[in-house]
Image (cartoon, rainbow, N blue to C red; front, top):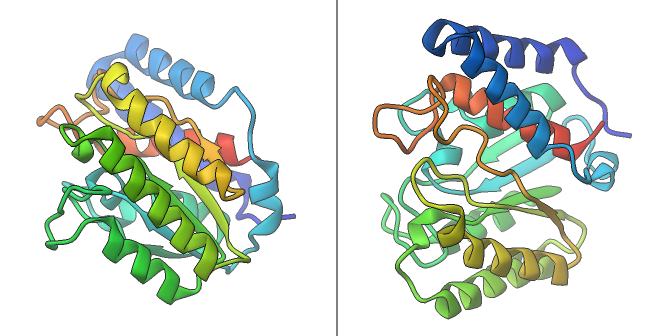
Length: 233
């Protein structure tokens, strides 16, 4: 069973999120955000992931600007919040603008992050769909997803691979669905686990920055709470 920091850690993060929501948007909005977070995490959790990753294990995250915490401190992004709660050694490899075919601010797509994740010898790898790939041919993105996941599973045969749905403040569910579906198929084909995170911060007052795309600290905290609920104890 996964060793975790005291439950107060997660509770504190979520409480802070709700307090910030109350201050920024009023109690009604905060209540709605909490209900959304709980609803998004109410379906099947992945206790197998929790059971297979121990306190102190190395975890890599492949993602975009949402995971990198654009506009915030790196320690305020949801991967860092979850890692702190669970005692993981985190390598957050996420790069703003990057996707499976989209080139990020470092001049690379997710291929470079996959290389880095393999180099870390991570015991757990999170890899997410990205709205940065919108506008690209779904078949091209799907092929890149398949290649990325196959490379991870081949190079890290003992690692847990966890795919997650794209998080976005602006893109619609309908636009994101083909990309989420393609990544889910690739991850599950490789024996990995899929997390449908929903959109816990999109359209919620106080949870999204002025650009209407990236989560605020309370938004990141709500995402972290959803991820925690999906992973299980």
